[in-house]
Length: 434
Ligand code: PLP
Image 1 (cartoon, rainbow, N blue to C red):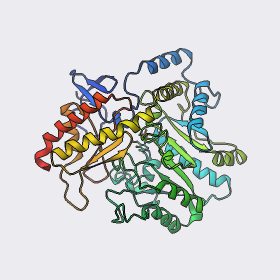
Image 2 (image 1 turned 180 degrees about the vertical axis):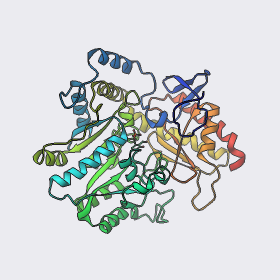
Image 3 (image 1 turned 135 degrees about the vertical axis):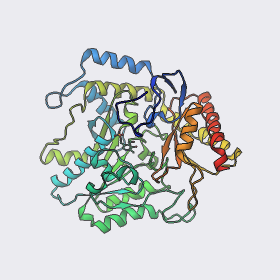
Image 4 (image 1 turned 45 degrees about the horizontal axis):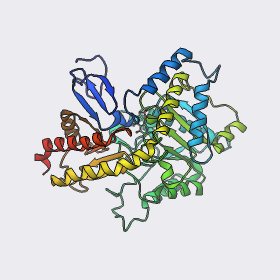
């Protein structure tokens, strides 16, 4: 279908999605696709869940919009209460947004304001990591170490320092598991010291890197070490849990893996599981109370922020995730999926790294120091032709990893079919890699 809208590849014909149910998406030609990546790692509870449809209908009949300048509303209040009850530590306050990028922007603004309110306005430097992705808006992309997505706006972005990625498959320090001394965590401390701790506002990390790196968990102890470094230099820690939050990695939050409590925790994607635009920032008491005791104002407001309809969706999604214990399901099914992917790769003699946590997995075809054997685009295309949706990952000019992150509700039979379809896709591209 020709389109008047801008899509990633101008001039390309995209299939037209008309319907989706459970783990499947259907196009206008009637072709079905097993959703192996939950859209953009969003649809954690699967498509077309009747309970969410009912919650939306009921809410539309009650009230859909009020401005935060005039009212609060029970749905947003309840969602805030439930999120803060679930979150670790004293992450006791919430600011709602409409997307992950907006939530990252809000987290940055909160961090800057925290330092202004506490008499240290010169703390304006944000430290993030190579290969990270924190969103598409100018502030969020300014924070991201994703060269491909930065390049058209590079000239106007702040020159903030970046620390090394925490990537054991392609360790920036050339270390292995047995020689790892968490140099990647220490590179965050080096960046803080180089900038001058008195100028640093916050460090931003994803507990498991999402599509920018291809489901990259940090080495054990990394999250704890980074939290300790931030504490040592009195720097705020922002956890970008847009992908990892709310069950995807087998925990409610990615930070739970090592029991750390960031100062600001950012949510998106799985918060509404694709049923409405919704993001959120959770704040520790320290940040909230400094603003409360200072100016008493946080004047960032997106028109649709905290609207009752999106909040009702968030509540219904949260109820569904809790009732079906989807974090446990991600924990249980992840190893089965990873084993299946490894099995079909091994059977074809294809070298690739299968990694991740819970149902946030990726297959990385790159070989450090060697020429690319296969591109993510080839695999994604072949998979789509076979009826499987995958998502390209990685920050190299030609991405060489694919995300495999199906809905957390995927059945075991569908999971096994996913592996079979992946094998079919590999057989199409195999002549290039064998
Ligand atoms: N942070 C991470 C880790 C993401 O993966 C994304 C989106 O892919 C974002 C932030 C931005 O979220 P959104 O696309 O909803 O603005």
